[in-house]
Length: 120
Figure (cartoon, rainbow, N blue to C red):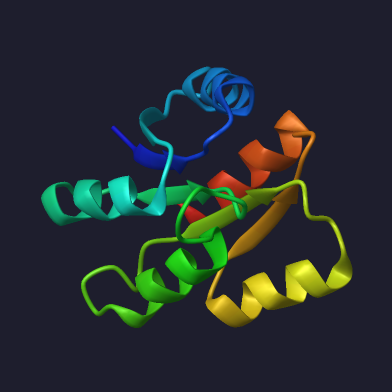
């Protein structure tokens, strides 16, 4: 069973993403902050992370950088899922180590494709 960690502070977006990915057979662990995500990662292995950029506290970009700089978590695929849609945002996400970038509002096929591409 493939487990994804969803870090999304909007209940509506979290519900849409959850329905989309659970419908494809993924198990989701859901949190609303990077700090809560760190607590999950300290306790459980996940196969991938779907990460919002704008979060309370630490941003998704900063959290992604931390994940990719930590030998314990550096190989976990990170798919950024954000309403920030400028070229520079996507470029910055790549610099932080993100594997893929999907813009909101979510195109479900695009999100599923990104997860399938990176999460094995």
